[in-house]
Image (cartoon, rainbow, N blue to C red; front, side):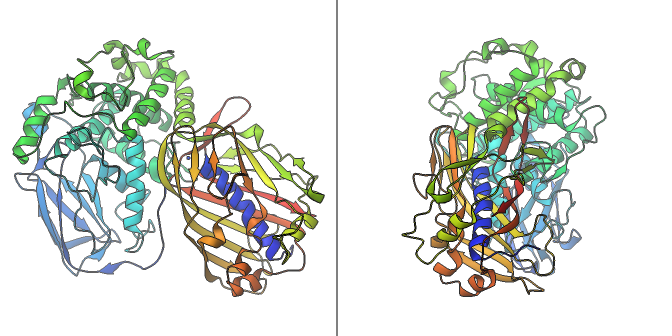
Length: 636
């Protein structure tokens, strides 16, 4: 066991912070823990649609996955429903829609497999719970393979609403298809597919986007062997689970997702989903509109059917799409889908795909003209016979997608700059690696952080001490555009492994960190607060505490200040700024618990992330997504 003081603890946490920071720099999150499930009553309204679904049956499941027999309803002729939640139901609850008539599909006189769709009601404050392909992806991303058991997935009345919002943001960024657009061409950046109001200005665009999402999955199912109910249902589930950690990398956190579709791996699903999305997007934002694939694999134009269905369920709805322009989410989705499609098909340019131009946020549908696309290429990514032909390109396509859609760092460029005697000294970690979504960055035993430098930083005169905090440096290879809130949990403890043994100090801080990027500049905003769980050396059970924004203000920074901007290739993270945070912010109990006479010792840290897409590329150009960073370091 190694002892460490508040300085070291802070150092450690800062190191975590730094790792955390860096990871954040590279990829939005919600959460919140708290109260357990509760029983309550209330009324929730919503709209059910892929296309609008009339006469559909809605079943309600308690938080533990059991059926709440007192709550059930059906959709009316306008695809609306009003659901009374009796006090016998235990919140949060999930909804399952089955049966009914999809008006878009019925207008096309074909059979389109539509698995049961899902949604969630978080608490008594939620009054809207739409059911759609988007809510279905959100549901699967939140339950993480636990069926209908929200409790087993860690969802409570306290955290479900924020988790829905976080997942909604992730789903719209990856597979939005313009769900957050209105028919007048404006965007609603705060739109939530589950809790958002669907009315005259956005019902048509949301229906169009819902059909586009389902159509993408149907085309993937065709490539997987058939447009069957089973294939479509599994692909919905797997993509939702993949989005549970905010990163489309084939993993659900640290767990690898295994495809149950014979001969069609999760890597195939990812690559084909992104590639087919490109052609679906191209159709949507053209005057010819979307075509959709029936159970026999045949495609039919759905534009008029979507307009007719929208007018049927809402006679006042605007059904013209002429003014609609791609929003930020759509433009980002297009870029990622294009990169993946080119890599999968082994092509080099958009024109090779038979598509005339990129989607831009300044060009409305009416200005793009008729659909211009190479139908051969579009069919290639929806044809099961092509899977084996392109199998060698699948990994490249997935690498390309992860690399362009995530904040990406160069593994071989990671260094630590320490400042013993105020002189910059570069320390090189052992070769960083990624396995099961975990990046490991550790200093070798031959290198150590300066204890004397850290000691000065922790002194009561730290503000005037001649000392410079250590900095961890990451080279950013890619900075995608977007906004969000990253959830970060940093854990630091004595010793060289992740297990807290008797006599070892431990601290874990959880906070939300807003971020924004315009595609060139990344900006991180100071977290407003952090929830802390800690053990002193003599503790047998954890104690809770909190840290204020002022205590966290310098946790993750660049050399330019506390709200960092990475405008060039290097993101710098200071290590030692948290050392005296607990004491200087008035958290005397935490400070006392963490105090020790010397910062010397060995430490283990980990930083986990949610709601943000992170990836790294090694020296062989292999790209892997990750959702946490861990490692060890020594202070002498």
